Image 1 (tube, rainbow, N blue to C red):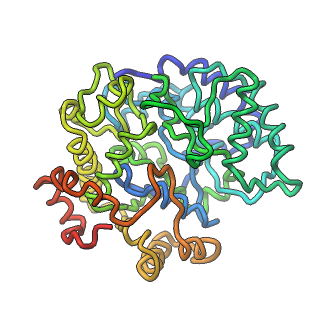
Image 2: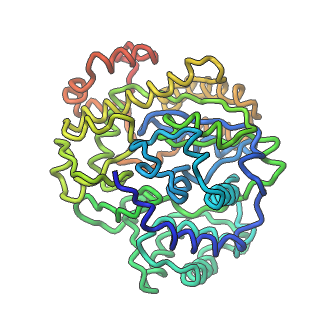
Length: 439
């Protein structure tokens, strides 16, 4: 594996450090002050992004704005840099960080953690926060804070009302990209999680630079309130990244004083494998640049640049899959993530709750019943706006196609062929023995 962040870290870290003072204040000694950590553990394309967005409706929780992966890459804990060659991380990887990188990681996590806000409370801080994210999203471009911050100010003046409400994040992002392109920066809307009608069209696989920090599709700017020390003392921090299926011991070490709980989110193998298959063939979700080209039938031949990009989480033993058919790779990713989660939970020392993605999207009584269980387990109030959002439904996040029940049956024969005996045994262990329940 390559070490993509090693090439860009000094310049990118310098730009991010330059922004830190204008983005503060934040809680000092952040990771030592978190008292409860809820890890949403799932396979990729298992619905964790949608669930995390739903939980952001509760004021009793705090979150990262997106995923943990960019912060790890910035301090040298991306795949390949710790010698593991996969997404697995343990306490030793954290202990090996030099003090400067450890402080950087702590400070940047503190500035990112918080909750959605109804309004932009501090426009200057918002402008610097957006500049931070643009720098992370485009590390191969010499993005200067002195260029991005004024551009954000101009878009805020045009599109954000006097009350500070940012009601159209997608429109804001499109306007910001136009400003940045006018300033000579080759950023593009096609890399963002936007409706298809708002993205410029690009052909092929649109592989990113190997200097990747945030995985595409990129997140959009949003109004945000940074967590204070009182929040960390009273509210669980929720983290969701499918790669965390291989990182629970690492997270224990990163948050040494936190009670760790695991929210195990499952999805039937046919739908998850079909979602992974679509994602591998979609012009996004690139996650790991590899030294030797992949020969994955159904993927590698679609676009030449794809052959050097693994997508989604990278399980231990992935090297045995580099010349296998794509659906077989997807089934292996589903199995590997849930096997890793079950192995950690088998110790019996971790409080955990297992819920099914199918129950969250089915609507009506199943969703409300599942949400009631979840809210009680989290120990948070079952109140607005969480209750209304749960009743009306969860919006899709980073979707490759409009959501539709049993969409996997469009290629049902192919998907079923990938569900071998090992996959079906795990499906039964997770409660998916009856295909009639597979939405």
